[in-house]
Length: 346
Image (cartoon, rainbow, N blue to C red; front, side, top):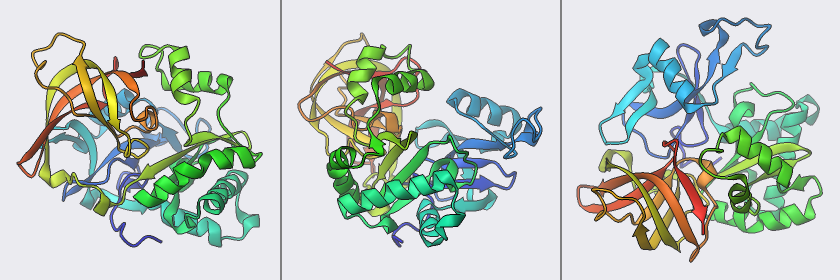
């Protein structure tokens, strides 16, 4: 297992002393807490019982629903970020009960008697093994996240893999087309499946289906295996990420729409994903019109692997100024929080 990952980062889950389960966001965190968003809630906090949810947990999908639940029941888990990221969800380190490590989960599946694994676990392990075979990225760098990680999956659950390290991520990304072409169980999403994904994400007010299809149809990190949805999240190691929480200050400047050309897409396949920009044209009237964003930034996997170098894009998001170590300063357009945001190729 990769020993450079000592603390929870993107792909990990953690549980609180109240048995709530949170999914960790980002690579760098405050000293006293872990930025993580509540995902699974014990049914005792709702008017439910075991017959409504056999696992004893209810899954929260919508981000607004997650905030509303914590605000009402556990406001101490809401965190007004002093570094300028706004209202976040986070778990104080002394409130963490369990750390769910996706690399250890994979190690456990590999070492377990195959007959003791359930159907979905076997399919997840099969996908990871195929990836290892075609990319030469060892299984010790591939983890299992999502519902399988916390043992709350069912036969219809998605498969969420997470891969750590820049070189590992690039190797897998380069070899995914061969996996789709050579492994009959592994398929890209069909047009019908992508329409379901568009509806499931609730993006109807952000992007029309035809535009969504054009953006998603060639993505390499998602698809199906044996008719189960899968997504592969590529994550940099902490020592590969140069914007540590403690030394990065962000200030919001409002909403902005731009048209631009992608100058560099090297980090666009990772989470967080980054697209460097050139030839930026501001499309909305704004007091911040002189603050031209240098890049697009998002911690949401849906925005990864959308555009390539020299593609022209039309994007609406939250304009922010970013300062690192009190010196280096630039502007970014951040996606992942606004209801009316979008990312289109033109």
